[in-house]
Image 1: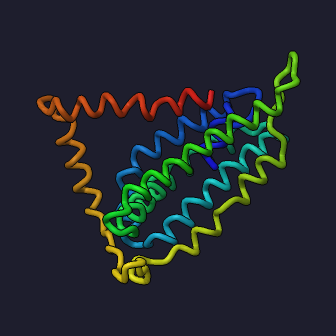
Image 2 (image 1 turned 180 degrees about the horizontal axis):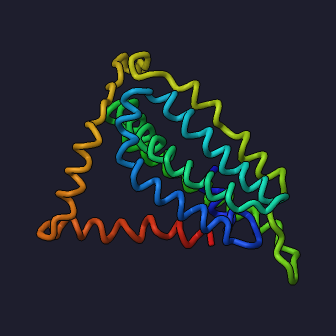
Length: 221
């Protein structure tokens, strides 16, 4: 749903400044908690980790609902920063579930299914302003309150229904692997190793990954 919200451009607002500033705060905190999120996942487990982060996505959508009426940019930026904190938890939990819950011969299917759902959000986000502005000749239309309320009410509580790894039994009778991430200190060392000047192959991978992710920054403008 965040992907849909981003796909609307400017968070669905005619003036994209608030959404751009919020996204800057999001990315700044995400850089840090993308590393720390794994340690928090080890403590909370999958369902509490996902619920904690999904609740912040609701706050983010709600900040745009508030902005519709009060134009309080500070609330939107703070919500974006908090979202970056919780996004680190989200991706730690998502990665653990996607790689440990399915049997080995279905991991590829689970990964492809996830990315199909994930990018469908962008399709939905692009359709919303297209439909709203299809008959507009001059002034663009912003997203109405009902759209944000729909985003806020979607799927957050479902995260509490995710079983802990110890209770998951696959179709073939095997139990899933209970993934425990390394400490965040190890991840810092990995990052330091990755950016050593002589690791040219790693830099090549990094140069390919950067444009793949950075287009989201331009997508919300």
